[in-house]
Image 1 (cartoon, one colour):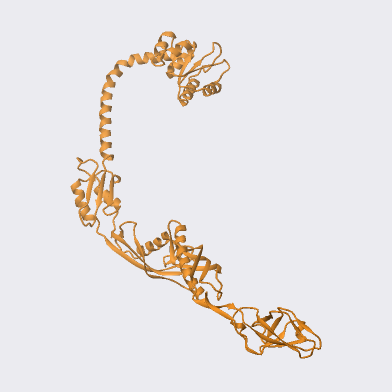
Image 2 (cartoon, one colour; image 1 turned 180 degrees about the horizontal axis):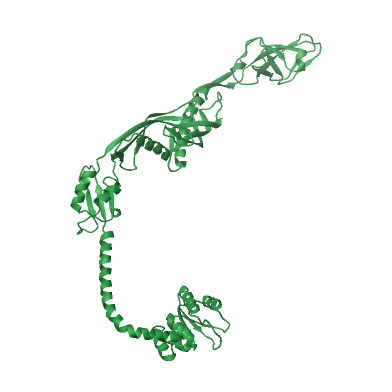
Length: 501
């Protein structure tokens, strides 16, 4: 076992000695007194040193030749030695008495005390045996009484007569309520979620797609006396310039003679049946040349053709929007449920479109495409409430309608919605709540425990049948099977209800 040797100096006092002990604490500490100096001459100082050693969890021994220090150590039962080697080598128990008696004289007060003890030794010996016997008997009886008074305990299982209590109340769930109220006001919290999706369907509309250009012959007339050259791809305009335009296919030259004519072939600038115009529809040439040359088609143009093709219609996108919004709503409900805090309830009927963030028609209406595709990003909002708030309303309603002389069987209840949940024009959810729970005759466990305390088990059965209506006899379980009495302390009698978890 590790031993710390602490050499004391003549100038050391109580504080410095404690500091030295704290520097290197160990299971055993030896304080070595200096040859000169007066250290810790009082019993109190030495006692404080002894307490300090105990705080460090150490045994204390002294190495000193000072007779007064030895006497004080003897009084405090601190072992002491004449040298460090002896202190380290010898046991620290049962050594101080012999060393005190043989190595130094007692003080005057110690001698007087020893004399008085010697004179009364015989009388004390005679009395001590009797006192010990009486004390032992009293202690045993007291412990036995304490044991039988406090240790026995009993557990009583009751089978109360139960019935069902029911109540209905209209619930108005709205964010305007800051807390629940017994009249049915239920505070809600609005939650939002954004979802995106895409949906396609086959195009139901049709559109005419131009394929071949119309063509025909026109007659150009010179309005001047000079030669006029009509360039190829000159633009010819009809009576309705917004419908279709035509171009010449080759360069034409009108002779230098007024009213001279020339026939040229032209075709529509765009394919399609719109180029099949009647005779006389072409009225002029675009540009400056139109002031010196007139033009006319004496025959109808033919050859313009087109084919029918599928194309998205407004009806297609209307149907897609309805279907996609329903799908996104279902997805938003799933997301809202996954984000729902523990203890909160989602009012599914309150899930509504808060805002359509994007609405993209991938295929344009009335342009050829085999399908219509719609992409939407929508923000949905919904109302949620704390289940605890609804249960609190149910508890208040049930308690307010509880028949006198009855009490709730336990804390559990069943809360259901009756009918459908309606959302009014204020965004409030309204439904009928039906609450039910088991109730039983009212009783006071402390009064019954006091009535049963100290009675026999048979008497306890009879008492319970009188004071508490039950469907079958109670079950009494004592912690000591051989014990016939109920505990004397009412607090040691415990109750449980059959049918409760």
